[in-house]
Image (cartoon, rainbow, N blue to C red; front, side, top):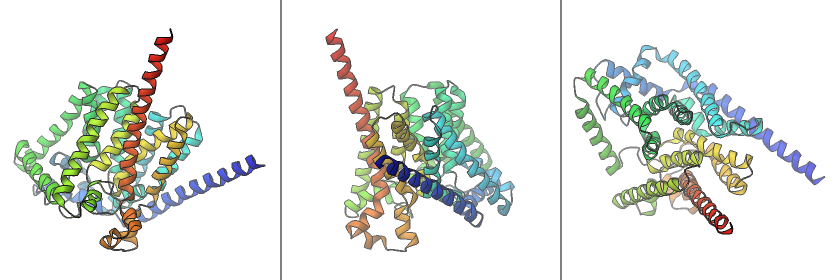
Length: 404
């Protein structure tokens, strides 16, 4: 009787979860045609480059590097009213392509249930809905990264390099993956990947009547100023996963200390990944998940970029499928489920609560920074699990050799 009740309860929970995913998808699709604000910025960015009036750091989409600007130029060929509908279809296709590639990479031998669970998880996330409503490119970037990782695994190095190179138009999310290929000495992938932004940077410079070096120098100055001073909107709390605003809160608003702590933690994360990855060369899927998490907490991101959490989510589901680290995986999957709410944005943008007042209350502070803590905590927990498993494996191997 107890088993029947448990099975029935699980089916109810699963049905409810899939229903919520369907509601989330429907809501995003219905509301998207009335949005498209980010898509409009990308279109204006491409249009201003075509007209030769683009200004680095002050034009539309100022945080994007110069080599990404020509990629947005085709958007200017389509009237915006039509473009919103076309881009909605593109993003929906990118979402399902992302899911397909994630399942190929992490769960090629999964049955339908884990595949449906991963799909439902992505579709319920606020990052998915916001990407569709704003017309952002995060789902396309996730698909490019997953495609590159899968292509590399299948020894299609040139394709992997092209895909990673294209994804670098949002390098704040994808640079760790390029660094990983450098770490693994995948020289063909790295070489091709670097050629892509170089070619687009040259195209940008030719149209603007400048040089690649001058345009890169101007962009570097803008980015340096933004990182040091915080810039308008850089320290927002609406769905961010970046660790720096949390450190700024802990440091009592001291920008210099918060920046120093952020850089220190970033370097510590890179070193820790290098050490653990070298000890666990067979754990590539876990490496990819850690890279995605590092990208999210190490630098500035808005809620739409959290769709890259599809990598750690797929890893955790695969752990459960293989009956490995089941408690660990269920706990953190529950945490990733919170991305459906986007509590920081819910509190500040939907409920219009004051962030400063929330910070003065422990529960309010937790609500503002829950996604940062989630991503940061999962990153270090995953590295610890890999390190512990590597130690256990080496101890077992030594024991076996001694017993022979």
